[in-house]
Amino acid sequence: MPQITPNFLFETQALEAAEFYVGIFPNSKIGTISYYGEEAPLPAGTVLVVDFSLDGNDFTAINGGHFFEFNESVSFRVVCHGQEEVDHYWDALSAGGSEGRCGWLKDRFGVSWQVSPVDIANYIGHPDPEKAQKAMAAMLQMTKLDLAVFESAINS
Image 1: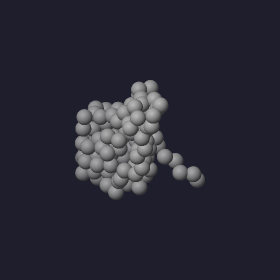
Image 2: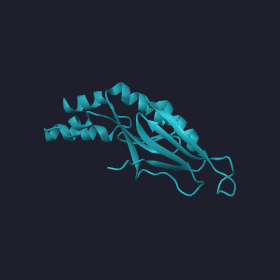
Image 3: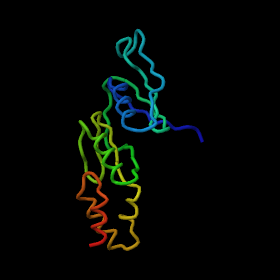
Image 4: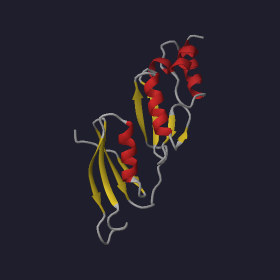
């Protein structure tokens, strides 16, 4: 299968965003950075493309001027192992952004993320339909997902 690389199209914040994300995720780094030359849509010397990786997953950030805005139709899911990881990624990614419902947030650049525990399927997909429904009802009341609230919901 060919490599698939998600691309972010920013107005002018490609490098700032890449540095922000690399600072949050372990084993991450900035790769190649290229710049606009003369006679380009943005001033010469402005960052054009930033290639970066987040824990081994490749991404590209492009500065293209103000043509498009991010929305929730595309998001990135961060699968966390335990509440401590949920808390870390939620706090880091939502800083300067906005919190949504059910583990969704927008970072300060407007990019949508889902921060969820790997165990979420054990709650909302519980084999007991009544417990699954209780877990779903609990999740619909949350912003950041809380494993203790899920446990309480299915054990009540």
